[in-house]
Image 1 (tube, helix red, strand yellow):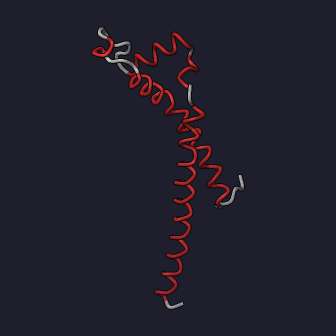
Image 2: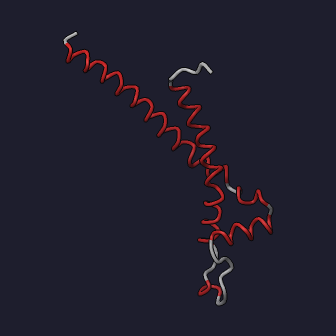
Image 3: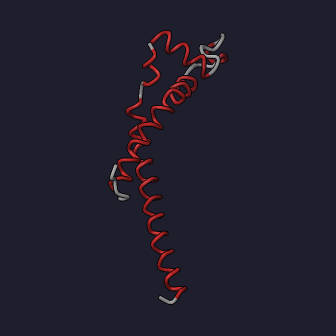
Length: 112
């Protein structure tokens, strides 16, 4: 494609990676949030509304539609996007720095 190995490429790749990760993880995060915020059987005085994460997803999709599990995806990306950018850009920059340092070290060891 002709993309160079620079900060711009690493930034774009990390933003796309952030989108992919958030889209993959959002249903699980949604289920966990709903489950944690629901009343337990002891609090409700009867049977708990959800029996587990899969029950949360099934009930949400039946009642609110399949896209309901992506409620809050923007907030999740606002949280995870910057993390992805920092991690991937720093890691790639460190790899490039390490390669340059290694090249200089090898040249120094050979006496050139």
